[in-house]
Image (cartoon, rainbow, N blue to C red; front, side, top):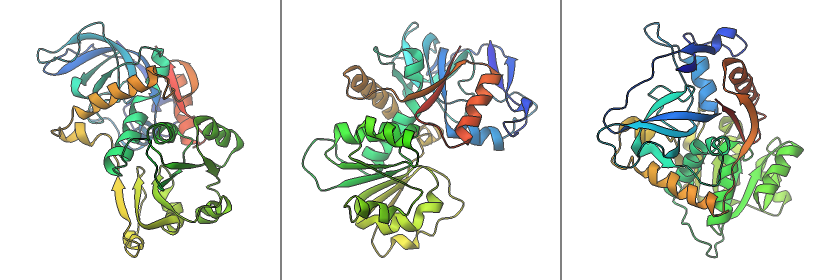
Length: 336
C-alpha cells in the first residue's frame, strides 16, 4: 500500500521530513477494523510528533490522526462494523497513523460517518469534535440544553480546528454566551459565521478586550493555544470559582494563580482513552455517532478550511507548514 512516512524527526523544510513510501497492508485481528482510508486531515499533533519523535529500529513512522474511509475487513471480535461501512475516527496516537491507504483502528474509537458529508468534509472533524466535546461536556461538565444561564464561555484561539467545533457545540447545544478570540479579519469573520456572540482580539489583553464588549468576567475559559502567553490574563478574566480548560503544552504554568479564585483546572487529551484502554473507551464511538447525527440534522457543519489536494508527501509537507504557521482557519484536508 502507499503511505507517507519518515525515519528521522526533521524540520518540515527538509525533503526527508515526509516521504512517499510503500508498506505491506496490515491484517485485522481482535477488535480492530481495517479501513481503506479515503481522506485525512492534519492537526497540530501531527507536526509536533513529526518534528520531535523519530522512528524506532530503522522502521518507517507513519503519522496522521484524522481519517474517513470504508471498512475493508474486520477482526473476529468486532461487533460494531462490517466491510463496506463508511467510518470516521481520530485513531490512537500509540499506533501507526492515517497517512496510509489502509489503517488498523480499534472499533471502540470509530464512528459511523455522517451520511451528508463527503470523505474530505468528514475527515476534517473527528479529532477536533472529540476534543471539543470531551472538554465541554466531560472535563468542564457543562450541561447540554438550551436552558437559561448566566454562564459565559471564552475560547482562546477559537478559529482553529478545535475551536471551530467547540463554538458550534456551545452555541447549538447550550444556553451559554460564547465569546471567541481571533486576531485577523478573516478568522474573526469565520467565528461570526460559526455563531459566536462576540469576538475579541487575543493580541491584546484579554481582560481589557472583554471589558470593551461589556463583559467583566467569564465563568468558563478554554485555551487552545499559547496558554503560557495568556495565562495571567486568563486568571484575571475568570470569575471566582470558574473553570479553566486547556489542550496545549505550555513549558511551565504557575497554577498557584488559580488558588485565590478557587478556579478548577481541566486538561483534555483525547488519546487518553485509547492509550490506557479505559473502561469507557467506547465512549468515543458513541460520541462520534452523536456528532454525525448533529451534522446530518444540520445542527453542526464541517470545519474544512483548506483542501490540499492529493495525499502525497509534497502536499502533506505544505499542509504541515500551514499548521506550523498558526494561521490555519478551520481544518486542512487531503485525499487519496
